[in-house]
Length: 353
Image 1 (cartoon, rainbow, N blue to C red):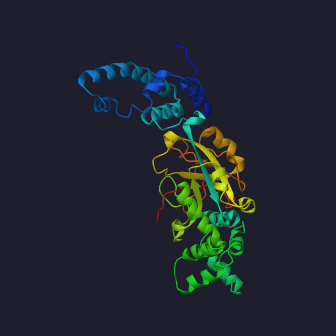
Image 2 (cartoon, helix red, strand yellow):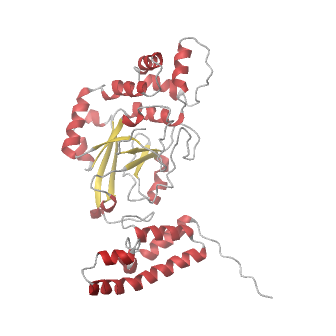
Image 3 (spheres, one colour):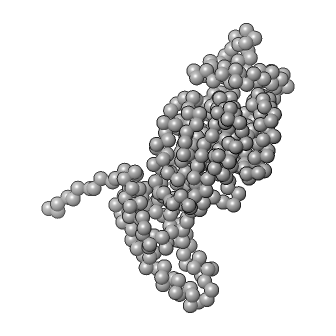
């Protein structure tokens, strides 16, 4: 009777990726193949100056592809599917960073994200991500002594939102009188209570955007393209809730007094140049600072150098997009069923529903 060989336990994702990184660090064969195997045959032809040049390049690449193919086949055979899929992507995309991979500082570029009035701004964002839009009208009804049909979210964010944005009640009543969708009242209140609270800030930002080549950041979308908030609410895509600049934090902070600097949310990054396109279209994820250690393991080159306002941050890369679950249409997917500290993303891309 044939002896049954016990199946080997498949390592965890973290163990697989650690083994993969150790195997690939300094590996010249991997370096020669990295980002070149999405279409190696025709890609080599397109980049060849002559038939003899093609043959020379192909003969050099072919044995290296064989080695990488053998490694992929081993991972597939052994059920190391995380290592298998990660190596596949790295061989196809030169800009892809393997989770946990680091690169020299000189191959990175500095970025700084700032947020004005973070208490007000984060209250609005958290309300949008975790509270039903009906609560705006419910708040007005209960204030007017009417019997409501809706129970407020246990977080108390609706009451906090009206406190942080004093003009919201005025704009909400006007929106309701005109029978319009929720959203324009939030936009007007944010504009009045945050953006116009200190008009000089607006002038400073415009100057900074011009001087430093920065961009506005808007509440972003999930990897499926859905808004993170309930899309019944309009106008959210047009509210710039933060700003990003391709410079070090000290070059941003010099535009503000020391007092103002203490009132601004600020996150600093050193991000791989290879992952930045010419217009630096980026997505910034923000999360509870307790999660910072997790994302430092997943994306050490993307995670912020600091925490601010109780939040850590990470620049999205393709290597962590699927792991960084986001809110979609009011249903929080980040691991904690509340509206107080969910993950959310900001994007440089201006998108209108």
